[in-house]
Length: 195
Image 1 (cartoon, helix red, strand yellow):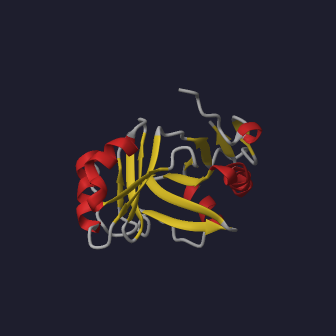
Image 2 (tube, rainbow, N blue to C red):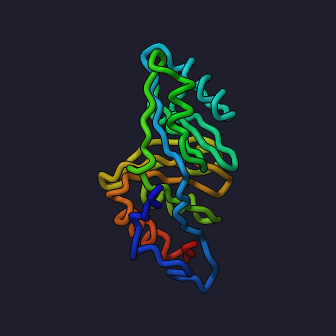
Image 3 (spheres, rainbow, N blue to C red):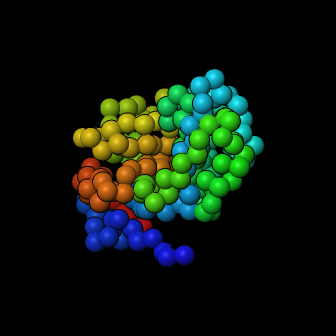
């Protein structure tokens, strides 16, 4: 298998950036999961497909958009009515989900080569994201596991909280470099580190 190159290329510069004198507010990284998969349930089959995803991944997923769950190696959430984003550290998740769901319940699309996964974590993660998206990222309003589909200046972004101060952001590969720079600019005043 040919190793996929990061679309972030020359803009991915490890180390501290911005105003770090008072400390590091967030850490940015490219998380590079092995699989990013979208599952779409046929009308009326949303609950059944959510159950099949639960069975295949051991994640507590419901058919409600926004509801989700994450573990050390997997994550899933409803991105729209009847649609789910499922992520795994391992490759071939699309094959496993297609076998579990079958053509009668819905469809499975492997997005692994079309998306870039960016992680932002740290005490200022909510604040940095709120500069870019008109969403309440406070833990009470956006609990661990919850996800959302949104945009920032026409850049489609799917966001999931995977820890108390950690978010995974999924963007189209073709916009990844531009979005990475925007995220870095938003984090400059908090001080950030790229890992």
